[in-house]
Image (tube, rainbow, N blue to C red):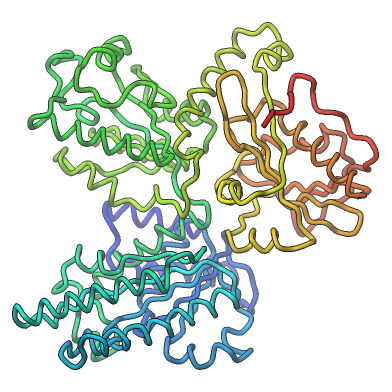
Length: 612
């Protein structure tokens, strides 16, 4: 209900929310929560996926917290946000009471350079040369020590602001040169002391944000002297927007697929009217606008974003453009799905969602036609429909302004994702032409590799745990730090499954996190990529896990199924594999299943071991 309240308000605004909108929405949210639970007590759950955030700053962050809470609720999260003052927490972090029992999912460390490095920001002439470098190193070592203490104590990701340029110190050419050199040294030390080699520590480019906004628009002396808030209230949405670039992938809420129109989107003009020679796609203006936009889309695809087409056109005409136009940068093979017909676009989007195997809420829709955008928002509100500007030269900026395609890590599978979906298309075609399922499976010539987690597979396993929705028995989301703790614990085992077939290497497509409880192996996480749903690889994976558990003297496998809005495809997996249903609780939808080990069916004979 809370999320719908925010989305309805945002739809009425027809644009980005300003700071006053956030203040109003937070009041509406608190009233709605009060209506749902008139007499709350500490610890009462809030609707949504739990998300705890700790903000540590040397400025007042109360207004930032308001906007951050709203954005988190809009994402379907149930946020708890606390804030601490930097100089206070540095002296008290070692005390057991600091932070109480609050266990954050993310810590944001936002520090202004003005108060930490006065020799750079307030009086550049007060120190120079060796003295300046020593002072800078000394202060940064304290910040580095704090990040280390926070990581050790809370074992969660850290998002650390870098430092903005000391704009106010530029007085003359000599002074500007001195300030630039000292700031460059500060940046170098920040990178080496705070970021370099630190897993789970990320940088928010605060300096870029300030520069993009403009220092005179960003700073607010009155707010600073009254409340110790350094920026104008109107800049808070931009700062929170950057925070969400990290929170969305952290909670598995980033988008997976970009669905694009063609006419006046991938090229200028209407193909059916102008013909292949009349569309605008040449290296000169205005065609260079669309050519550069296509190059940007290709870069997104290389990062793992799935591309698809949804266009009202004659498919034969479109095929000619892909095959014959000399400046068509994107090729048809770059698109995982294409719906080129005269059907309504919301229905086409649903079919794309089913074909690719992702949820509608993982899709971003781009179309130059405002009527098509309005219809999509009305008929498929779960799809993120981008409000494109009228000027095509601004299309790229409109997409870059989203915070929905970011990732905390990049894996080899990301760069191969488009090829993986082309392989899925080929498998689907083979399935349609096969006389039987058994024949289809044999013709695929599947080979698998079952392995315990290795350094090379760590990032991909973390990615699958965060992003997999459909064939995910528990949908438990763990951070890199939590998975690292499982790796180091004798009570946990983590396994992966890789699959290769006649159409190529599909990469790592399965992950399982096993909690060892005496003689029982409990499957805390069991998942498969949506690309391989329907290939019976769950049988293979469970068989391999059972054999491994047998070898380590376990007596039973314990499977857990927690229903979610998206994982109905695997709700009967344990029953179908011969597990016995042993527990269902009234206070939770969780189901517990058991399989007594001794002998588990071998993997199907149409799946062979992958030779290294």
